[in-house]
Image 1 (cartoon, protein in one colour):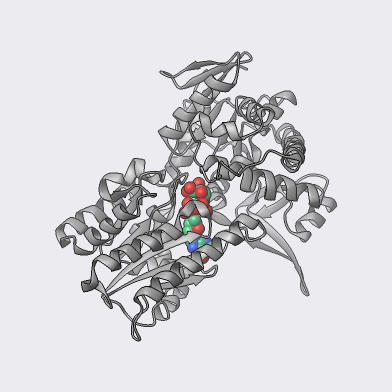
Image 2 (image 1 turned 60 degrees about the vertical axis):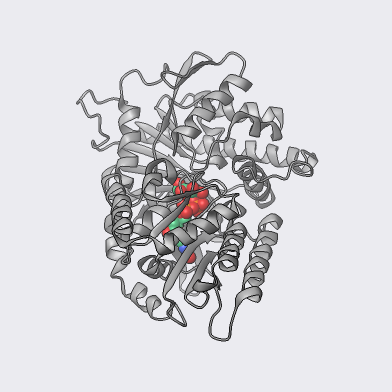
Length: 496
Ligand code: GDG
């Protein structure tokens, strides 16, 4: 990346191309005409910070019907603005619906997601059958179509860096090299990168193409050092001709060097300071709980099998079996955002979540007390209202790239609540020493951690809560972006 101005912290204004499956805007058609809905998940929110500071061209798949109309009307990118009026260019790439479905709802989710979160049930699944072969072809094709658009836009704007996001787009970095894009490319994976053996349940062709795809980047980024290490091992195990340097965390392949780095994602503390006082959050707080319990245990998750909601309920049931003195005094509030219900595994999991909550309530409920209060709906203001109110926050994911709940909730919590944190959540690398660590499979340990959290002396709770807050304020989402840009700017990144 040019410059020579000595900028190594990513603060200089740059011409950047951002590439993600879901874009920062989803179009819809109403009686009043075309509308643009902003937002759409943590990834988009995290990257939106680039828009005011740089000249951004964002490339994403067309998802809604109206997105497709926009993609067809416009040969290239459209001018758009963020919430505060900062301009950026947006290019949507439309692919045939059935192809998008195979790419997104079969190959990326659940196939890759399940491999990377260790969710397959190996005696039975996955079966690498014709359906998976077809879905892999679609994955490759959608990556190629997106890479075509990125190459065009990178050329048109004279891109100084390309930032490719996540597991839907593993092939894009290499495809950009094949298309002659010279700008430095960073690929960031938002989900865990498992140990190399997990990749044995992917087809050989797909596994190798994914690794070679990523090795087209100058830098590949993960949330944790553990994921970065696992990626290096996968290159060593599966890519003949790759030279892996563990000491410098680099892979040399096909005449290029790819650096492998950990950049833990974070949140914007100022945004949460403002949200804590938002009128919608105050309104949600008024109807949050029917009866005020003495102590509130909270979990907030998408209804994703990786979040381990069922074992969380089972552990709470075990705690209630062992501690009748807490009956009637403690409630577990589960605010679950329904997710990916078009995928059968997800619809089945939501059924299991309801059954597990019912089992605990059937065993323990009394007229005036229901131990688990389960709400399934998309309601972000209510989640923030609950963040303020918890005494114990349960984050027991089977494995998670980072888990932003563990960073967001302590920022606004007003009761010095204790965080119970899975050792397999990415957040554990940074926050583990301030939390109560659990093995997410161990419901006995989780039940014991619930008790420890509920009886923890105040002085201890205060210190732990402050530890998390201070860490997140000192390492916010701006740092996540700045570190990636700074690494791309470093001289000698990647032989071209
Ligand atoms: C992936 C990785 C990684 C909460 N309730 C609602 C709602 N939320 C927001 C939270 C938070 C986000 O959803 C969830 O973020 P997570 O990080 O916990 O989980 P994933 O969705 O699985 O995200 C993860 C992340 O990418 C970023 O790299 O940390 O490991 O799996 O921001 O505030 N949002 C809406 N409705 C709600 O009811 N719309």
